[in-house]
Image (cartoon, rainbow, N blue to C red; front, top):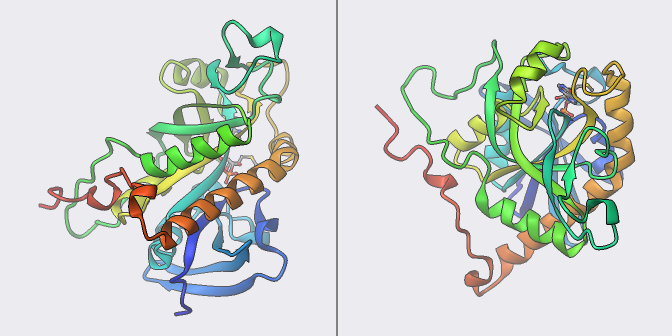
Length: 291
Ligand SMILES: CSC[C@H]1O[C@H](OP(=O)(O)O)[C@H](O)[C@@H]1O
């Protein structure tokens, strides 16, 4: 296996992110017990990043057929923290974090809503609801392991993300991600029900986060809100709308990814590890969970 030992960050990228690593990236394949995964490795300002395309490039594997076991096993072999990039539909208004002094209309209760989501497209999941139906969501089919899900998304990586967003004055919302099986979009009745339990809806976050936790990886997700969920605007929901919104925000997402890789790279090399205090429990998520 090619050595990925200096990798600061692995990115699992969704729709519209294949160009993250196009220029001068070294392409290779990682063999896993679940299948072979194509990855590309590149350096950005001295930080090594490995990119895994969730839909595996031009063939575009649809959400319900993604080989999550292979993708996450590849990330485990790389061994670096993982940032997953996902697109989502917004199901309800969510409070925003950011500086709104110049945005008069948001002064009282700043929130992202189906009306203004284009201005505030970034969302960080803190928890999830799993409504997938037909996916293998554990590495432990033969033995029995019950993984802890108290903090599904790594608190350490999220704290770094929040710092980077704040430094760059990028407003964001955070909350609960709900995953459907897809590939169809949701019905009106489903969105009315789901919005009681979650803020955004997507098709690709699960079981990625669960498998990453089983693998002991530090894993967080950075979502782009691409559309109001079904029936929350007068429009139909289309894949074209999703890709257009991703493309519009891609530059900012790339900047956040590069900044995160840089912080993680500095932390790896810093003699004073207190500077980068890793306050998460990701590596211990299966401790006490084996029967
Ligand atoms: C392009 S329409 C819906 C499709 O896009 C999202 O994928 P990803 O999160 O990998 O960008 C969504 O969850 C669906 O899979």
